[in-house]
Image (cartoon, rainbow, N blue to C red; front, side, top):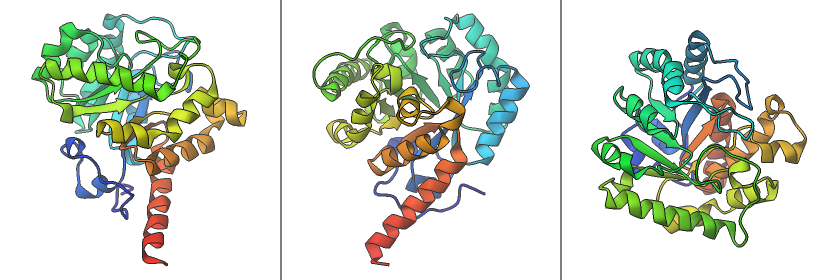
Length: 298
């Protein structure tokens, strides 16, 4: 079982996430979300998992390789992706969600459309992962009535898919924090418990086309965590800013991805969303052993 006990990293999983893990050992490292794109136009794997049987096989493999939660994406959000209706998202999602829920696998939905979110909540998903950061206040009563964890993501676009617009001027982390302050206020006013919320600062084109912007935010995760006292959710896997830095294609960006994910974990990220759970879990094991060696002087 790849989900064995690890020495402690420099944090413990926040109480708001502990109710969703299967055993105490997982509380000693970041929660791992495994990515399953049920789409024809993912930047990372094309349409490899568009068919339900392929998506199911991949999701089960990710769980076997260490994913705690499977994040199901029925629409791509990269700048080149085609728009998808809620009806089509649900059509892609339905057979995969039903089968994985039947397996007892913890599930997350990666969609900003309230109709798709409502469909998933009714079928027991444990997390909603929204690139718009739950912009639709008409849906807040339904969110308040649920107990799902909420991944509130920041993007410079505010609505819809990523594009190639430049980052706003000024300090990017201040820009991100102003967004979170406003969104947390609105969610709180609607009766949504703060303890259910995770913060995703956005990465890659969600922060603009310059790689330096994403690296700066990644390096300053500790500031974000300290400012809000909420779990930080990071999704850097195979993203453009990493690929630009090393000159690799998406399928060749595994080493760059792992390096960024480990740095995020060591800076306090509570949740990491990844295409490849196995190397991440191995890397977290080594990082934890290293920390344990430092503390004992071994």
